[in-house]
Picture 1 (tube, helix red, strand yellow):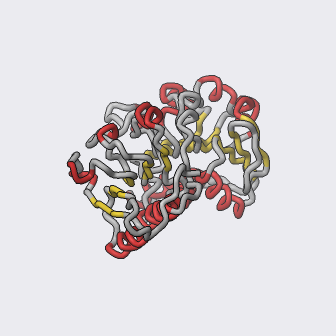
Picture 2: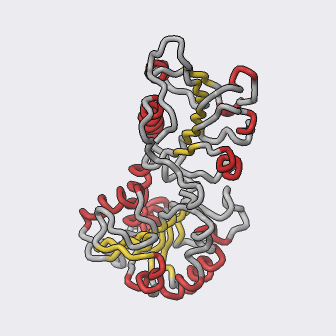
Picture 3: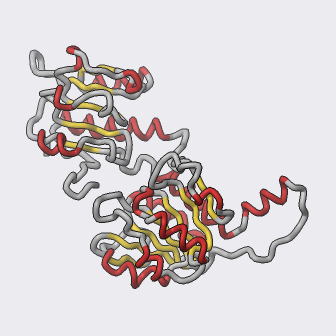
Length: 328
């Protein structure tokens, strides 16, 4: 719960001041103001400190932290991120100040889920080869195409993105397995196992999807030991963070055929360096951290921010609160 409650419309009372760095529609700004806030908009691309914003109580942003120092805002009590990731946040300062941090968890789950299903099908149906044949005007059948039906698809991480993806994969008649911190059951998953059983589970998988948060514990989680545990010909997808996979080990296992095909939207270094050998594989689909893109994103970002701002001013528990000690 928030530690205090300031009623909306309290005459002569304290009015919460919110700095928003994303341009919403006029009607959306009005709706936020009508909750009882003083709203200040500053474009994040050109943001800088000023006396006018010094006394803000809350900050709504993607990544304002390379433009301003949160220690310059003595009244700041809550940061609502418009991103799902928190890598950009000065965690030490937030922890020291006791600032509440919330994110846009769930806001990008639907477009990412659609992207994952698309890439599984593209890899199974050899779409890349057919596109090449079309470009070259080559009429040649391909009998090496696979069915997704009956396959086993596993997820490292069973959060919102994994759940939306699993929900869509149900229609294909696949066995869906989840790997999470403690093996807790999750909707749309046939079975879930704890992370300490990962080397026992991955040999059962035809497709492995990495969808876990990036933390110190998940750094290079998919490394040599996990790759060695996989069966030959595993398909791999990463939409989480690049550093969850050891890229050197990935490249080695792409060369050996342990990984038959991979679809990668995230990388250890972004942009992916031009000298990375990942560019050279014809069995790797590379996407420039783009799986989240959708015409609906701005609306969903606003809806989550609006819901939390309404809860905050009413003294209610916020959604998507980040446990900074866990990192998600």
